[in-house]
Length: 314
Image (cartoon, rainbow, N blue to C red; front, side):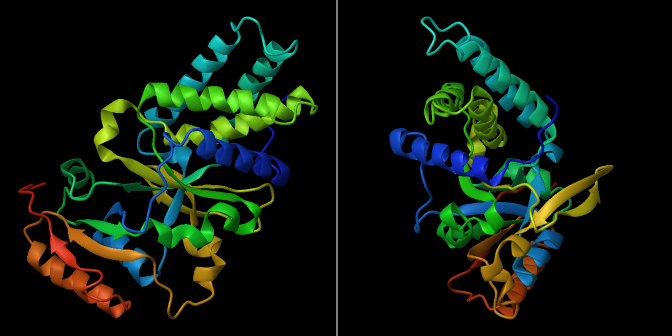
């Protein structure tokens, strides 16, 4: 049938319904961040300048991840679950196998479709992250209050798209359960719709979760992701940057969040502190990070800057 492009507004509505259903009957899978929780975004000093001075975060096309295995892992799980679902006896309906065939085709066609993510960790001061971002002594970990993103997630998703702050799943049994739930929900939610319509909805749900599935070897990162799925003909267009020999598409949170962009002079992200990574210039970096936060209107007590105590030389 060929590639179908980005999800329509209607399909995004059905995807939203599935995400809410996951929360309601599988509470053990979803742990929504609370006010007293925290998420940490690792970057370098250059990234910190853009985040603080511009009150902005970048959401990058998931296909351009540093680790392509992340996406192949999720798709492999989906294909495995779809294959096993074909063997269900008795089948849920006479058209069940035809439905699964369409879901698999749409999932394959959707390999290049757009899901944009910004990554966070539940853990601060991770050696693995300093190795990734602090090899030249410029790494920082920015502490965020998750509920501070509530104005652009959920029912307030920007520009008709879908934005969610979602945890990353590392356990294979959880990943398989979500895929099975997506297949069942889309098939039965509006059972009078054509199977092609229901298959598209299942594929949308699977495409949303593929960037949230990682190998269990990475579980210590306890990662969360701010995920944006743009609608067809989204009025906000992505930006592009050159890195790693690629031209990488990304959205800026300021473009997607009118509540932030409308108050340029006073806009602030929900930052509650910064950890400065190991460096021979760590003391100077702590002072300069304090200065840039203060210049952006952050309080030193409410957003303290601390040095990492990990003796990592890069």
